[in-house]
Image (cartoon, rainbow, N blue to C red; front, side):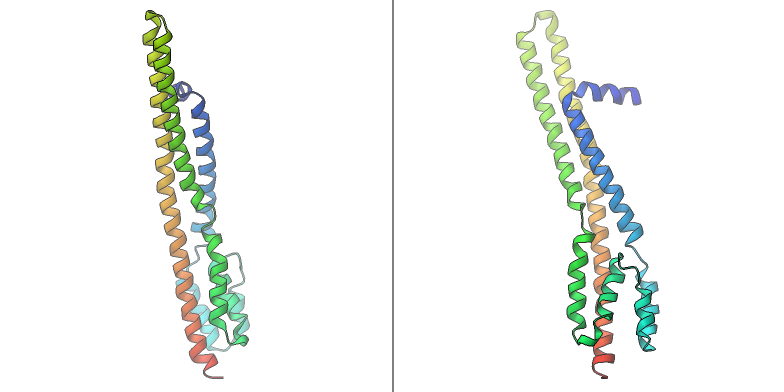
Length: 209
């Protein structure tokens, strides 16, 4: 299996190296985004929020803020940014401001995965066209005994680059969809609990003051 893959890569010619480089970049981005979206940023908000809510009901603002100490996590950042500006009377504005700030971070580099998938596909197509041109030109200029060999070589280049480009592109597009969906889910969770905080503050702190 590995020998066949290595032979196909070699037969694909120069474009195979370009597709290989694209796949390496895509893999690095996918792994990095998986770490952040599935481990670093994905806090259990439904478990953390009751703790924050309990501290707010007790009037213990310092403890509520302390729970959101890790500002690298979008959920904590938005809640803390809102809590720290309660005295302004504009908690909703600050909550929205924080949400606008974290959204680019959640979606960072995800679009590159889709871009790299398209590049891999196009490199495969370019390799296909180049291989076919080389095959037909080789057949036209070659001696009768060499025609079959040159035609086979050109077609091998064409087919292998197409296959390898698709092998890279399809997983990239799947990963892009999954990562984008996860980033959207995290953002939705942040917006949901941010609204809960704003509603609580408006009804129990601002109206009660």
